Length: 322
Ligand SMILES: NC(=O)c1ccc[n+]([C@@H]2O[C@H](COP(=O)([O-])OP(=O)(O)OC[C@H]3O[C@@H](n4cnc5c(N)ncnc54)[C@H](O)[C@@H]3O)[C@@H](O)[C@H]2O)c1
Image (cartoon, rainbow, N blue to C red; front, side):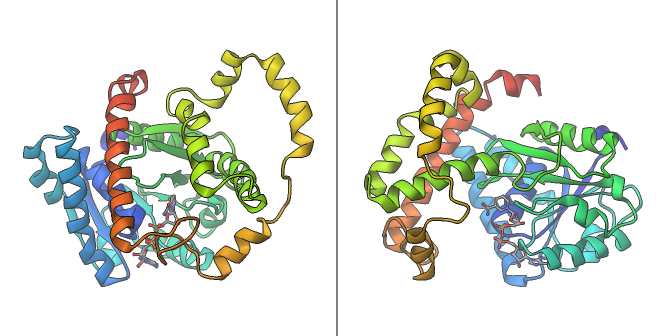
């Protein structure tokens, strides 16, 4: 199958990630079926997508006249077998649970046509272990999106050890056609690429917070206005080249032995989680807000993200290339 042959995409799991993935492909013109084992989650998906599309219209990212067509291209189908039975590509975005995903891949392999490529949006699990559940190991791949998936540009495309080059290129091109910043990851490894980098940073952030070096507000402020400010425009390695690798090397040689290298999350972070400080879900974490205030935080985040998407990606060379 070539990328231009792809017409129908099925998304399994209609939660935080699945509904946004479905929206992205429907906006790009694909016929999308969306399914979920939980009827309430599936029912909530369409209004959620309609609300996202309204923000896209507000920011001039799509035309108001396109909304009805996008929504019409998404069919919510409670029955899994029916939802995937004629899909060219299936993307699963169900709960991050090895056994649940293993069972799902087994089922998908049985009910999907031979041509169908099976993709997982897992954030940590290795795709080869799910490919092993199927009779189409060359047509199984990992596509790692970032939350909110309909806004954040990057999708890591990660092959398993059995994925064919043809499948890899097909899925890479498909995501580019859907307007995403697809990134080729050459090797399968735990955490893939972005989450490994992110975790290295978070270990130090949690440790500095535990030591009381600065308040949660000030830690976020310092990061947002320094390397966070740079990173949306230039990556860490280009930043290195611009700053001078001789200097970076000297700083690294001095500092690396002194920063956190623990193999478990810091004690204070463990205690925060164990006492229910999950963040927005429970109302408090590093920050405490009312539900209304959390809603405002999310709305502000999405407004700023959409603005950035427009400024940095929809007019950039990356977008022009794709
Ligand atoms: N949330 C994130 O920031 C994020 C980022 C990148 C990747 N991911 C990955 O994406 C996947 C989905 O995450 P999420 O945050 O959308 O989770 P979520 O809990 O919001 O949604 C998961 C949905 O899957 C449904 N589901 C569970 N088991 C199912 C099954 N067997 N068949 C059909 N539907 C089933 C649930 O009812 C739920 O609606 C996970 O693998 C997660 O690790 C999440």
